[in-house]
Amino acid sequence: MNQNTKDRFFITTPIYYVNGVPHLGHAYTMVATDAFARWHRLKGEEVFFLTGTDEHGLKVAQSAAEEGLTPKEWVDKVSVGFVEAWEKLGIDYDDFIRTTEDRHYKTVSAFLQAIYDNGYIYKDLYKGLYCVACEAYYQKAELLEGDLCPTHLIKVTEMEEANYFFALSRLQNDLLAWYEANPNAAIPESKRNEALGFIKGGLEDISITRTSMTWGVPVPWDKEHVFYVWCDALVNYATAVGFGVDQDRFDQWWPSVHHVLGKDILRFHLVWWPAMCMAAGVAPPSQLIVHGWLLVGGEKMAKSRGNKVDPLELVSTYGLDPVRFYLMRETPFGSDGDFSYEGLVQRSNSELSNNYGNLLSRVIAVVVSKLHGVAPKASPDSPIAAEVERLAQQAAAKWDSFAPSEALESSWEIIRVTNSYLEANEPWKMEESDELREILGSALEVLRIVSILAYPAIPTTAAAVWGRINMDGELVDQNISDSLRWGQYLGGSLLEKREPLFPRLSLEN
Ligand code: MSP
Image (tube, rainbow, N blue to C red; front, side, top):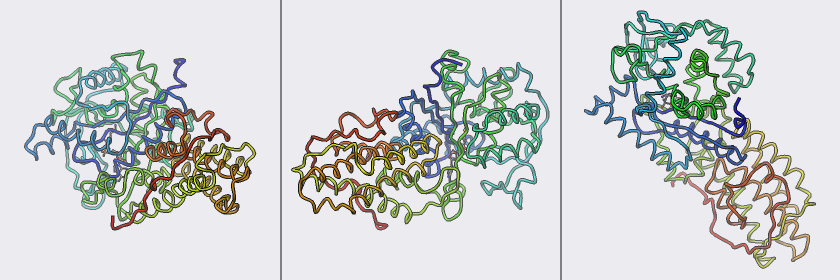
């Protein structure tokens, strides 16, 4: 393995279908991945955060036709909407891949040619029931009554074509052995078990090319065919780091790659993709991180169901960080969660305005009124120091294990401990003294530590707190290997009372 690999962290989102504007479900995958990337940057790792758009396939070709555009005109138009949305959601990615780019055609050709040369691809006749929205074939038994796709609730169509197959069935034992040897390859465990269930249940070979349409990457050994969209899409992860084009670059980033994905695309990522890597002679990914669905009224958000929530509208109504915080805090990553406006307002008011925001404004108010605004430094002997350090380590461990809601829970526990400490000592009733300085210095130290821990979820406001307590340097440049230790708030500068950072929200907003 390359010597630099351990300091590098490559993380990806799925690439989004360009069949409309992004909805809150897409934003959920995106904010989580952004938070993980930010956390790893704080750890001092070299991070490569990849996202993009999935621009081939029947569905895209159909959407384009409905709009009276060529597929290329359509994807150019729609993919811009994703770029703009991610900017407004504060997503700090390093690369945006589009599967219609030349670099992707090169890698798909090289990757699938490697699988072909290794003897895992053969030609045969295929007949099956196809869901255009999933871009996938279904077994009859998997469908709902009336031959409806279980994800999109639309009728599947019968398709028959001569095409190439990937010999997935031959990799069944290799996949099982790989999961056995890598217990953390897929998290959470329930999702790993689901994948193992598919594999143990018996794998069928998959049809990976199409002749019924032309909107795809041409098969290098048979130009009559294009690759099936899922096959082309999964390879994007290898394209972005130069597979088949720049071997040195690929070796630097692969296989330390972490794929974040929703549970609806588990089978493609946890079964097909590691198998495709093995067949191509490439190491499978380091980790597959599966999250649940964000439901609205108990149902998955989807264009075909007409229950989409617009993330940009939410951000303009409630503010960016309250939305990001709600998405990361409300539901344990891996489980399904129900989106509600009430939940968003309630989370933001209780945890951002009342806890975090009030701690900040209250401490600064007392420093201004009792200590002429001069910030005291953190005392090494503070009675809350040990508990705060313990909780901070706990929060860090949760970020490390891709558990944002628990990471934020432990971080907010630090705030609760501190608020109780203040309630018990009532510094606002004390006169200027060393004891008063110690209490306020401790609270400022907590604000410093919590801002670091909250930064991945709420980067803008965490950085604003950092500024208001007059920390030197940028929060983003902190290295958490030592900045989470107690006792680094130096004080000495003048603090000022300012308007609240987290205004209280109401449903009427
Ligand atoms: N194009 C494929 C992925 C190819 S990756 C090689 C795709 N695109 S998608 O646009 O339909 O979905 C992208 C991501 O958004 C998936 O992780 C999916 O789980 C996520 N979500 C879409 N709706 C969602 C919710 N309602 N809730 C949470 N995430 C959801 O699949």
